Length: 287
Image (cartoon, rainbow, N blue to C red; front, side, top):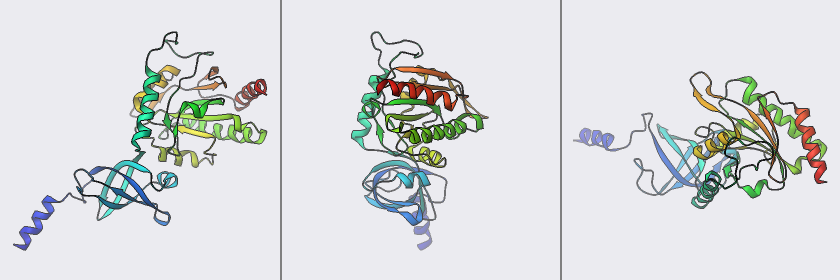
């Protein structure tokens, strides 16, 4: 009888020994520094726990670095032998998500007089809302009256001359701008081509490995449909690839303080001196 009840319990309970997962949405209660873990409060975990509770979960280094007590997050929960891991973590505040959706919906709707093809020099840079690597929602007003340097990367890139080289040069540009006192007026932006993988925490870890200043260099990620629209509008072509994950073209944009595209540089071999010089010219015009 006892054996039968034990077997019944195994059948009825969710298995923690299989590679299955559950969607978890909850609020961060504690950030455990020594264990790279979070304590998360939840209402239910569909298919796993149907009553409110708390759970300690291990997270990646980037997710741990940007975690904030009281923040609502969502992610994919897996567990084995009573140890739980949360991956694919995104901010999950309903009001923030709604604001992002409305801004991006406005970006994608047709506009009278707007350029119908790829954006060119002199065109208005799109107004969008995406998360940066700190998990903060970046809105159009956060970029107003700033010079922008914009390019496209993804963290799983396997080609040394593409994303990795771009981030290295952006870090060098950031250092030069800081040394010259121009950094306050410039925002460096890399936009993810792989938003289904590049969560804010993953973006943070990727940039942090280059020792960048997270306040002035943002990697943006979020809605795949909105990002697909933006990349197409800017003229970046990307397609899935078994060998390199994503095959894509590259472009760097310099945007002026009126949110107009000032310069386009196709390809990967943009010069640090050239970009800095153009920013210096633009900045001089505003002094």
